[in-house]
Length: 153
Ligand SMILES: Nc1c(NC[C@H](O)[C@H](O)[C@H](O)CO)[nH]c(=O)[nH]c1=O
Ligand SMILES: CC(=O)[C@@H](O)COP(=O)(O)O
Image (cartoon, rainbow, N blue to C red; front, side, top):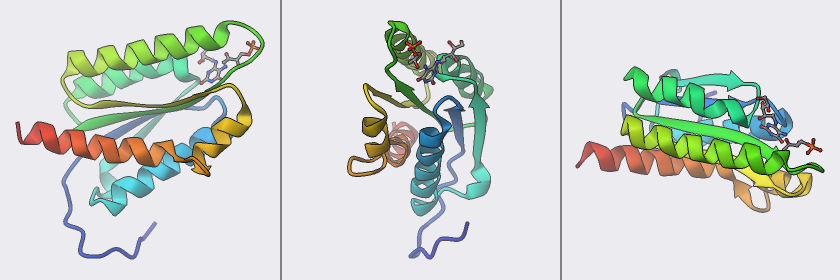
């Protein structure tokens, strides 16, 4: 993908993305949004690596592997958890969020929580590139900010 950009200086940042396949019609848009934000802000497309996992519950484990590998300046966690008719939604959301937070603190690098958690499909669509923006784009921008902040500490 070649974007017509201004004179964007390459950041040299290396980015790992963990994406959940569940609700892929949403998560695919989050991944595209994250890639767009990263490249527009100077990250080389060659410095972005994506690992797909079955669902949001599996994100923390692979995020941990990436974060502890020493290969990445940040890890973006992308997924979409949409409430069903049982309490499974709450368990998946809570464990995913808790796991991602624990990985970031233990690895000492930015591990961003870009998992959309919604009651309806419409809410998820709104956050995957329509009226509520693209949460993948947003967390990528936050990741760049955090990585640069850590570089300067
Ligand atoms: N219902 C959703 C899930 N459920 C699957 C779990 O994340 C996990 O893969 C399974 O429990 C096996 O360990 N995952 C999502 O990402 N989004 C959902 O809406
Ligand atoms: C978030 C989920 O795990 C959900 O899709 C599962 O649906 P259900 O609660 O109806 O089994």
